[in-house]
Amino acid sequence: MARQKGIIKLKGTIGDITFYKTQDGHLAREKGGIDASRIKNDPAFQRTRENGSEFGRAGNAGKILRTALRALLLNSADGRMVSRLTQQMVKVIQADVISVRGLRNVIDGEAELLTGFEFNIRGKLGTSLFAPFVGAIDRATGNITVDLDSFIPANMIAAPSGTTHFKIISAGAEIDFETETFVEAHSESDILPWDGTATAAINQVNAVTPASTKPLFLALGVEFYQEVNGQMYPLKNGSYNPLALVKVDGGV
Image 1: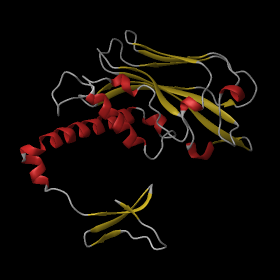
Image 2: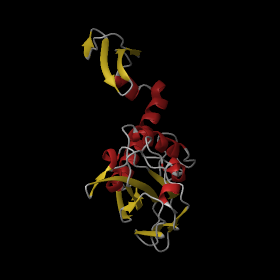
Image 3: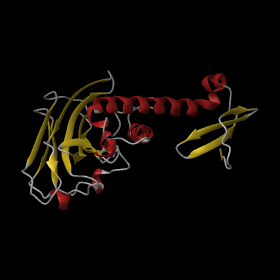
Image 4: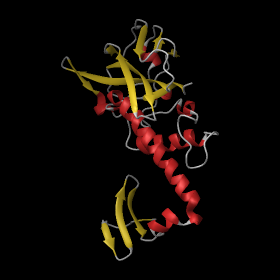
């Protein structure tokens, strides 16, 4: 892979060189590689096939999780979130010590490795929300909760420039990665002023299936707003809204 320089940037293929544009700029690469049928059938590429199978499984698992949390992700994700989540899902699958290579999966892996995953690298929860919170997953009742005591927003939330208001959002998700189904519930606070006035305590309950054996997830985030002439507008279209997985229970 090479980086294009100069005034004229090319896109397309010339001979054996393909020119293309990415978030990292205009790049070029030479055609090549091994015939697909050889990779599929040659014993020498057994490891390649196994890795490809698990990578595909990781991508699919990430897609299911993203779909489950779609209501929150619409305003809280960066352009590389999908690839970052897939990479983390690969680690979850590789932690499976039961299945053989190529058949390792999320269920037998360590879903807890997703704890702390930030969906928006431009606005991380860990560097935005400093108010103490308690996240909990009660598998018996199916309640996935988050509680914040009263706090002063201007002191405990690092908001981007232009913020006048905010709200706290959360979601609980129960995901069956085998059947590719999920149960999701989400909550949000009122839109609150970002100032020196203490908030009331915030308690959010997201209910999924009681006594579920499936992996359970708690996501927590903040949405920023700007008030203009009495109307609330999402600040910079949500570009800096943080959202993260703060609690994960991998199932039983």
